[in-house]
Length: 553
Image: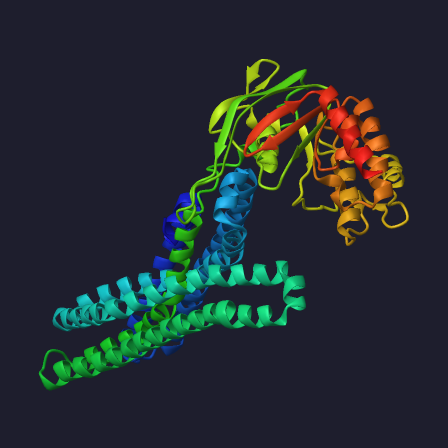
């Protein structure tokens, strides 16, 4: 979709009003020229009246042109605001699988660079609309004044446009490369920020990263944006020179060849000089318009959710709870990358009963995190079904199914806002009680529904993330290696006191853990191995744990 298409599709009446005002202001601009040539230059005794008419004509031109530009500015920026809101809502409504496929740098580039390009384009759009309307009106008047000179003018301008096509093509090519450069630079920025500790400890790596990755991308960006600006400058200068040359040709044909009188040639020259500004402005605005077109194409290529209606689903559209939750024949296969086969998980078959405490063990790369994402509905099963109390989870109930879970994944993000699962505020007394339970009452406090600080060590941040998950009051709590960053004393408290306390409230708890010393505390023990899930019966698990304990003594 084009910029004009976006405007027209979202604000038809407002855009129609802008078009009418632009045409009216263009007609008034030509009327000013006609008034100057036919009334002011003619002189006469009624000069005060003529001057008053001239002033009124200028005031009308000022008012209509200003209204057209202001209306289009407001319309354009409202459209960008709506596009930004829609984009963020669609990101929030898009499945995590697609967001991971797009990648964080590409999303950041879309939310910053692409939306900025659209905003800048709409800044230039009013003068382009006005210039187009003025050109049509002015050329129509010139055709009425001297058809022969008009034909020469149109042919000359068309030849100028044809000569500019190649330059526009080059500008478009380099603008596309500039936008690709934005993606690469955002990847470099994210790598620099996420890897700041590693880069600080390994200065040779930092130097190679700067020289071989960032600097190459920055240099390519510089080269392409420079060439785009050079071609744009050539296009602008060419348009300027050829327009001035056209004035000379028209005077030669009119006066030298007798096609028209000197007064008509002067009117042609004055009109073309009036058109010169919008024509050169249009050429100067080409990079912004081409950037906006590339950005629109980039936004469309993200393949985000078509709508975000499920983001605002009412709290009544949730599952009231469950007795059993099952995975039946669930499979998930990651796509191949660079010729290497993708990892496969499943088939997974398990039934979880409400109120159980389940531990999941397994080595790195065994599929534990994928199992967690499938269980919580973040990943769609490629085969098999999720079953809640005998009813399959469908597309219409998938969002509601996800609301059964609170979680702390290994790559969790810690928000400062405290909310219950239904989006309402959490009582301060409940927050204070859990801060004391988690040993964080002396480090952070609740202020107006937010945590006063979240800048702590990873273990302490995990405690706050657990607080966030618990106060949501969801039926299931999934914890992915939660205790891995806790000190031995708090780890013991977590397994022997905290988990039983949470289970006593009726929560179903699924904890991914390597702490085999506490496996006997679980109701059930599951093991992931090479993408397959198996259950270890309680007796065998307790015997193996006992052997491990005796061996360690």
